[in-house]
Structure formats: C-alpha cells, structure tokens
Length: 271
Image (cartoon, rainbow, N blue to C red; front, side, top):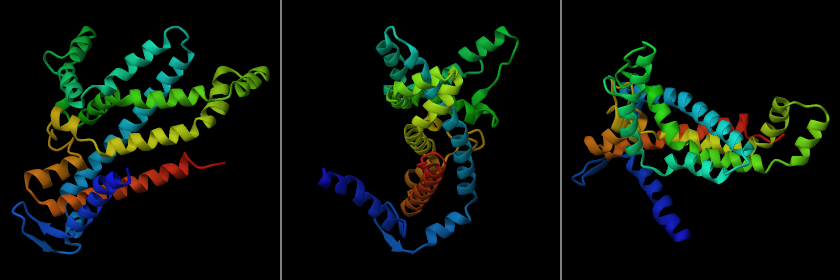
C-alpha cells in the first residue's frame, strides 16, 4: 500500500509542483521559468473569473447538499419500516454516472420539452431557460450535483445519528425538552465531527466541479459556469500548456486547504 501511495499519489504531486515551474509543451520540450506561471495567474482575468464562478457554485452547492443530506438522514433515522429499502433508493443516484445524471437533468431543464418547464406551465410560469441564463445556470447545476451526490453524505450523517447515545435524548425528554430542542442542543453537538467531515468532502467536491458543467453547459453562457477545473482542463488538454495547468491545480489545492482549515476552525473545533 505504501508503494502504491508513493507511485500514484506522492510522486504525481511532486511532478505537478516541478511541472508548474516550467514551460512544458506536448512536444516534450521544456524550459525552467521558476514562478512565471504563478505570476501569470495573478494577471489572468480568466483565472479570476473562474475562481469567482467556483466560489459562487461552492456557496450554493455545499449548504444545499448538507441540508438535503441531513434532512434525509433525520427522516430515515425515524423510519422503522423497511429502512434499508429507502436508504438504497436515496443512495442510488450516487452510484450512477455524473455524465448520465447531467444528461437527464439537462433534459429536465430543457426550455421546450423539459419536465420542469412543463410543471411550471401548469401554474402559468415560464418557460425558463435555466441553463442559458447567467442567474440560473449555477443553481441549476448545483441542484443536479446535489441530487447526484447527497446519498453518500446522507449515509455518513445517518451513521452519526445512530451513534448519538439514547440516554442523552431520554434525559432531555424527561426534563421537558421538545423535539427541536433535543435536536439543537444534543443531536447537533454530537454530530459535529461528522458534519465537519461532510462539509470538507462536499467542499472539495464543489471546488473540483467539472463534469456537470462540461456536459450541461460547456462553460456557458458567457463563461458563467466556467470553473477552475474547467480552466485547468482547457489549459492542459486544449492548449497543451501543461506547466500553466499544473500551476492552476496547485493554487486550487491551496485554496481548498485554506477553506478546509477555516471549516476546521469554525465547525470541527473541540470544546
């Protein structure tokens, strides 16, 4: 396992760091340019725009997914009959392909024949072109990604709920605490480590968003869904500027690390 970790995790990271310090082309020719790729990033407006799109998407996606996962986990925790069946149903989208999910939701959002606009038409609303408007494209993609991925976090939170000592809840009930009070003052504090884990993995997933945007919008309209990973993809595999793409990847890693440390400070701290 150590050899596999070094070969497929550690060495590629070292290679990416070294590659980011060079001007490396697909022909195999390269030139050491030190920190020029990082200086170029600071003055590249496309990097700034992609960062704003990624941050905006993260702000929408992470709370939506966490709340959806937590709400579903609480409901499943209360279900007594056939809990395993419902757990499997909610987890099923997670094991499907993100490309397949994106294609399905692209049809749902379709302005002419989409299911969502058909339902809105019953209430004399729309039609709304969800994927072609800058104001709706990121929330639409966030809903797709949340539907696709909330099942994993739901299972983690469900396990956390089942680990909360029943004696704490019974003692609070005897003292007259209502359902909301028990959830707020006992369940949520006990879930803090699990919530921290879910927040971190969902945040990392949000910063790495690419597949759904690539399939559903191609980065449009007018780069309104052009994320950092999409920018990295174009730099590396469209323009073959591998050194610059590696620099983007390392900057993205640092951003995710900083955000995770902030989350650790706010949510994961020990009392």
